[in-house]
Length: 394
Image (cartoon, rainbow, N blue to C red; front, side):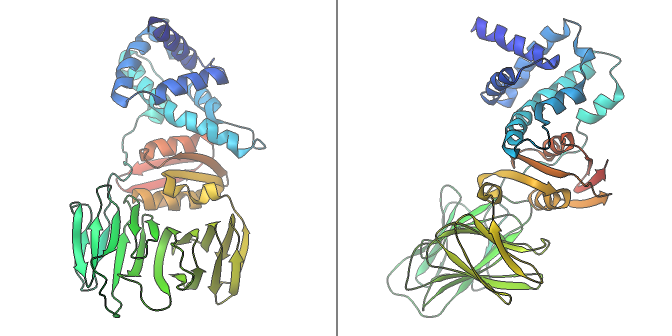
């Protein structure tokens, strides 16, 4: 144990002095990942005292040190940047704690360092779901206050909230009705992703700022649902009853037709196109512009004027479902639309940065930490005031 403490002290000192090698950064990163935040803070306090005793902490070039962690040449593969951003996300806690210790334990710190690493306003990632279900009779159920168990009955179907928070529609008897009753699941901005099992076993993940309207039970010759916003579907196979997803977004209307497959639909009104991405199986995307059959790893994009298909990074598209932001040569306005929906903030711009951004980071991070990582990529600064974020081009 003593040897391990000595090694961490050494790594921590090299980190502050900006002399860590890539391998040493990996070692320190692994140590950080294994610690709870409270435990890390206590350990950091002890190790900071060891470092300040050397008299070198006040000479740290913080901007250079942090940039060196995640900065990469523009021609380097994006994959390498993701790795460095992953390290940087964990190291951000060290930087913020160090900033606190230096400011409070030493005198004469430059004001610009205090300004860069102190958090005056912050917004936490969504901690719970604020979603609601509107039943066929108009009754509204708030999922955050609903306890696990049966929430409602409609005909021979019941709505359950499972112990893990997911929703499920299940039959209570074999006797049913031919009358189609519709429910709507609304998941507002600033809410955790909601998972739903439809009556046929199809599973749906609904992103923040989205809604799904669907039959309580599927009858007839098709299974039809409609969406606004973004959802990922894992469709239960049934060749005799095709599954169709209708979307309407800012005047762009269409249908995704499947038999059994995995796909994602992004149909937010504020996006420049409606994007359907196929992960497994096959789908046909139909609109007034014609129809496109997709293969796995392809995306159909419907704008106001045309519909096209192209290869796409599934990892980038599905990051939201996996609890991540993933940007791949992405402009700041696209980045901020995702952030605005997740953290439920309003965005204003003081100039539009021309830079493109690439990286992967947790959607569970506080907003200030997300912004710190983006700032280190260059060309932009952020200001948080209540629920308003100002993007400042540099």
